[in-house]
Length: 373
Length: 251
Image (cartoon, rainbow over all chains, first blue to last red; front, side, top):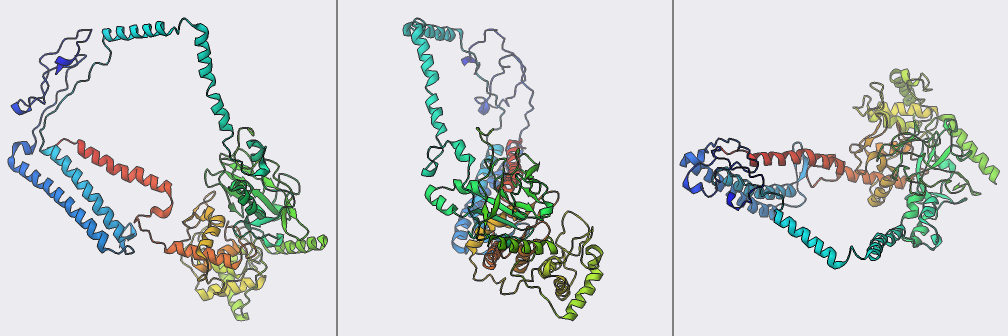
């Protein structure tokens, strides 16, 4: 085996007399390697060869054979049981199994039979290899990693010839303009990335992504409606301690025109009502309406929708990363990774007594973006 | 016109503040039982509740005022065993109810007689048989899922508080909880979430409670985090075990 190896330049001698690991029986000779300590001439670890029971006793070998045959037979049985289970068991049948609880009987049978069927084939094959196939420790040497000096020289010569024939070294200006062209060609692709946002809505035409992110569908006088049922709200509808998920009243028309949910995502708010005396601070004076506060529903960390509102502590908790905002204190962050307060929407009532937005948010909602910093 | 509305709204809000943190909604009618029921309820209240909530339910440092919380709140807290509280803590846990349903109704009648508040929902109100489960699912995901988890399994809040699992909640308890906002749960009054919407939500929660788990091990229906944890521990342990067996020396 060592004959096909290129002799190493350091000429380390082939070790002789290293501890052999070959059993010596004629059959195994071709699998074994001659005594050879390998590159670096480290002595081989001495591994005692312990013959297996199935090597020593024909009876043990027979027993292993029966074991493996049984595994393959069981695998066949599992395949049959799978088909029986598929045909015979009603899909809806449930059985109770301790720990697991109520389980779909057919699913269980299909999973167990197919799983065991495949597992038993594999386990039988492994057992066969471990107990009955030849048992010899075999060492396979690595090829030396470096190229030969001849190969090195050849490669260097080819490179040099290529350099001379192409004139890459001679034509200096051409070489430099090529490098310049290669450096510039990806830039148009980067510029394209800037326009990856879709803008189907003519109302948003001409706005940059940053401008679109900075405003929402809310405008002064726009009614606030409940999310899901789209009912306008009167202040008296919301009790102290109440929570309402809400949207602008025209959100469905906007969605229909834009063919996307972008505006809905930005303009989702929650309305909470607390005792006005509990409100310690707001983002603007008089932005509440008799203790009703409107805050964005979109977390300022990475934009999860949040409405985990504790009405006694006035805390709003984000389930994604546990950012906690104090809605009684201007929506300030009191815990978690969010860097900015929850934006507050100023609200009031219109002539008919329904809750309306007093204006848009005075800052972008949701997570930070490049232009916002 | 505007001034009249403002005064009207101020009056409503003033009334709200006058009673409690839990405000009555417009549809509420106090469940006023007969006098003996109220008397019996008052006796039970003085015996079991007044040490924290005060002799006249005015509240104290150990417990909030119960004036205006309504019969629904009393029924929810007492029937689920949350009250009386076994020990002070972040939140009152569910336990076996201490009072019989008759005693519970007596106490509810007493509290309801103090000030108007949300009444115990009628059988008609909690009848969800004709409710739209799909619509209930939409409303559940908008209003409830953030705390109680998409499959109603409950979840953690801040500082030891938690939203309980809904798997053993009865339709009446679900209705009462939405109406009264127990513990830190906000109130979903009939004005913002009308009775048909509440019925739809109840129908959805009942559907979740009865949903089979065809795959077998539901792992608490908590979603990909728990499933991943199971994979990385139990399943990978089995795979490592198999690899060790394959590599073991044969004897």
